[in-house]
Image (cartoon, rainbow, N blue to C red; front, side, top):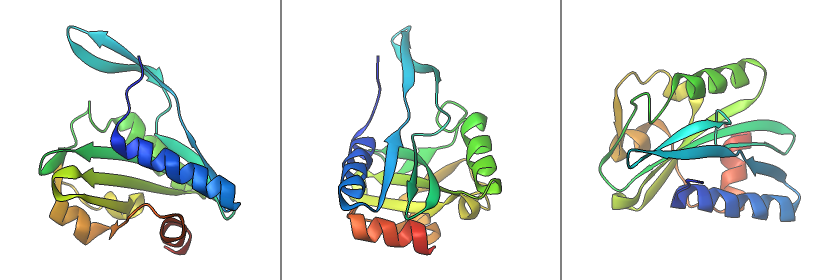
Length: 150
């Protein structure tokens, strides 16, 4: 069973645009999902949603989305494995990002992981994501400018 949301589909479309324009590649990382007691859980798979290279810069992206006002950072929604990978990725010279979508507000924000780790709350709201990151429309040029020029 695969699980993916509208945000991941947008990033996958962006990945196609990046590749076609020759600016880089982003690859969706596969995760095996299992149904247990009516709930869906990741069984195994990649620690982040997307990995790639844009204009020669290694990029890691974790996507989070909600139809409500806030995204919770419980272990099941943002695991220690994901956090550790993003941190290690940056230590190794790459750039790591979180992309948050708040569909109720029709907003998508990209936040550098190094900036996000300074935020120590259990949830994030649309307003806080706006303050920490940059609102994006998922256009290729805008996205490249943000991740390369940070």
